Length: 302
Ligand SMILES: C[S@@+](CC[C@H](N)C(=O)[O-])C[C@H]1O[C@@H](n2cnc3c(N)ncnc32)[C@H](O)[C@@H]1O
Image (cartoon, rainbow, N blue to C red; front, side, top):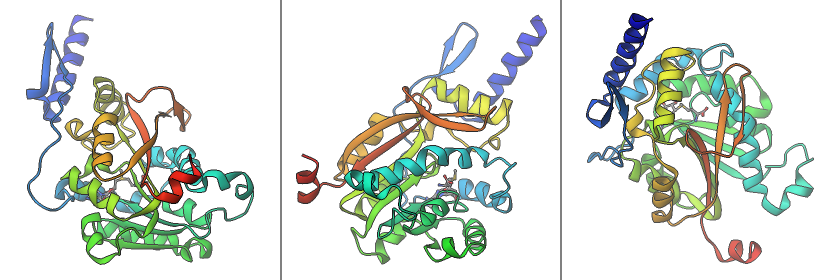
């Protein structure tokens, strides 16, 4: 029993080391726990794409749409994020549009860090005109190939291999009804540039929907130790705990980008049932909905 305990303590310690948390740990007895550091990594370069991160995603590109592979949590997350995005866009129109076959017709959505299109496709099926961008060309090719299998999706979605900051140089500012950044901000460099570029491309009155992971000891235990090293439903090394962002830090960045935050909600994912849903707790996964103020928007929501 003693040696089993020593072995698991060793394993946890090696995971902490592997995730470069050594200097951010607090000693409690003989165990070391991550402390809540506020330093997001500051990057002086002007790209949001981190080569190592992009390579890791590119390496699993061919498996993106295999239901039984490690992207299962992303598929399950659609149970929460598709209705969230639909309702944020429809607002008061929800009651009379919800039963229409394409309630998001006429809305332009940008999905930043879209991966293979797991979120773009259902939004395109709901009628939105979706642009998906990702820094990995391998993944964009997978997204294009998958979209081409369904005419209804292919007609409404377009993909580009680029970053958000590059897109701001080619796309008109304020051109999207919604900009989505789902499960991506924790993988980017230069978070300030990432957030400000996303904010720039939102129309006045438009929405920004972000889903991501909080930086708490619980998120370290659940996402990294539990998800990557015990259950292995997430590829090991996918996450760097230091890059997780708290709702407070994200709210501040969104406000600096000229947005007002309307909603912050916790999300759970149950790997046993492969279900996701809302939770009254934002300590691990959470979503934020914000809007860009406009005269009309403020009047109609007064
Ligand atoms: C965890 S996946 C999420 C995919 C998708 N948003 C979803 O939820 O189904 C993160 C994606 O972000 C992309 N990515 C990471 N950093 C990026 C950046 N700076 N610009 C664009 N895409 C990026 C990766 O290549 C990867 O496909």
